[in-house]
Length: 87
Ligand SMILES: [Zn+2]
Image (tube, rainbow, N blue to C red):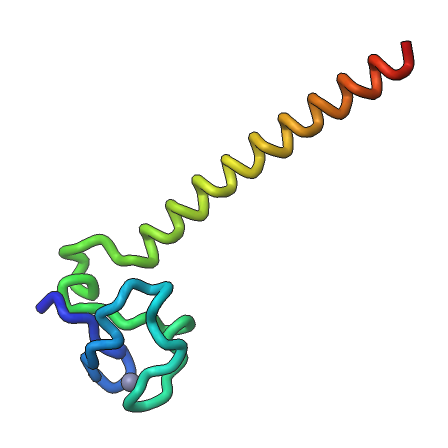
């Protein structure tokens, strides 16, 4: 029920149970691109568990906010340096 399976062929090989960053790029059975079509368990397909795609999107959103804050801080520091240099 919670074993992840290739959405193309239903293969549930052990390599498909690894976290996404240690998973192979291709299904060992049918060579489906696992980045384009990530393996999912029945529970995930039925919406019982949050899909890993949703979790990754939320992570990307947090990364976006962190990058935005870092860029904003960089701009503030640069403007401060320029302003003090012009005095
Ligand atoms: Zn497959």
